[in-house]
Image (cartoon, rainbow, N blue to C red; front, top):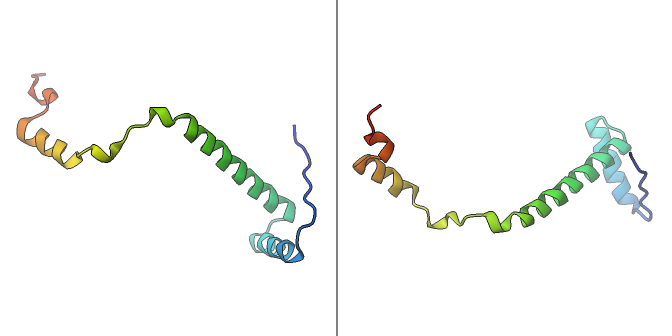
Length: 84
């Protein structure tokens, strides 16, 4: 289901800038505004999901990938020690 949105009291300079952008893209003002509103809604959804998953994140600042690679080269990883 779709709904209609209406924005009042838009400054003329804002409308002109949006109309110019729509024309440059070969779009109608409706298409441009729908795209902008959709992008903003997605950003809101992503931010909410990012907040919901905060407890599951790992701090990677303490990881030392170079050290792990060197350790693997020097000592070999357990998987390298098994005979297939």
